[in-house]
Figure 1: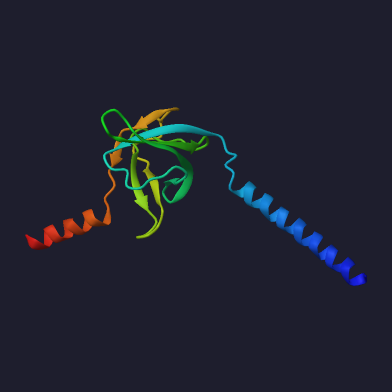
Figure 2 (figure 1 turned 30 degrees about the horizontal axis):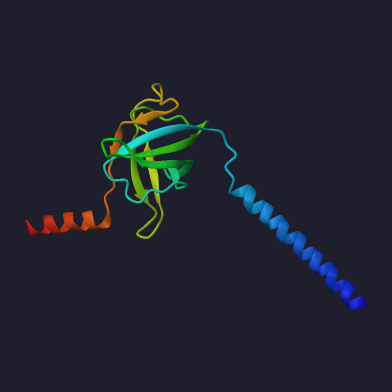
Length: 146
């Protein structure tokens, strides 16, 4: 009888521990920071998905909230940036990847002064289109054959 009592306590402790880990996991993966929306248009978006990171100089500053095509068949990428991060209008945005097999993310390079800043729902005009590995290899082969 005493053996069942100890097993019940251990089972209860395991259940409490599992629930606490689940709650911590949900808390860490929930974005509670206030954000503002921005947009960029690309000829090739290169595998960007909703939920991928937006980074500036390697630091996460936001999340991609939408990817769609406009009437001119440009890839429109909508993203949210943390409200405390201000981005100059002359900034450049490009699709980058974390290594060969890594996730894609938007990389923002701030250019110009920090006086003229982007506002809510504004579009970043300076974009660099995505270059896949195939594009890069074909450039190398083209240069090698000349």
